[in-house]
Amino acid sequence: MIADPHSPLSDDAYASAPTISQELCLIAEATDSRPSDVSKDREFRLRKAALLDRVALRELAHGDARAAADADEAATVAAEWLIEYDIRHRGLSRKGQDLVLSEDYRNYVRTEYLAWIRSQAA
Image (cartoon, rainbow, N blue to C red; front, side, top):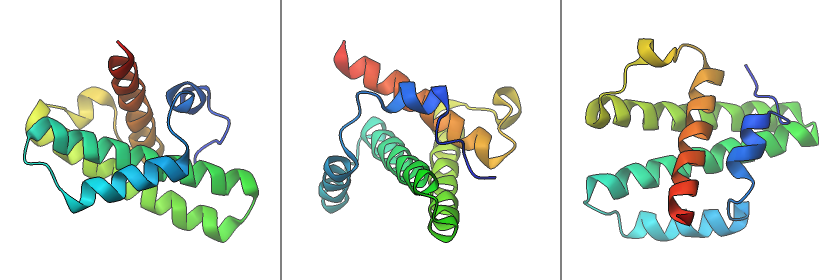
């Protein structure tokens, strides 16, 4: 299921995010120096999942079905990677959060990213 590029949740979540290019550079830098701190590892996963979600939304908006499908799959895998981390380290329950479909995974990333970005501004 390909995400809606005009989802209010994605608009809110990514409104104050760095540009995709800036975030890509930050992710690449973090990849070279993977932190050992659990909270930093989650931040890395969250930012990577949000980046791939944004790329997928952009591809969908540009109308290239093949690129959108590939980007959508990558974003869903990254979202699941974050969710698996949160299950292991934060007590997340898929059932409790109704994390069933790929769109649910992506919405989870957006919700978590929005909370994270707001905490950075505080």
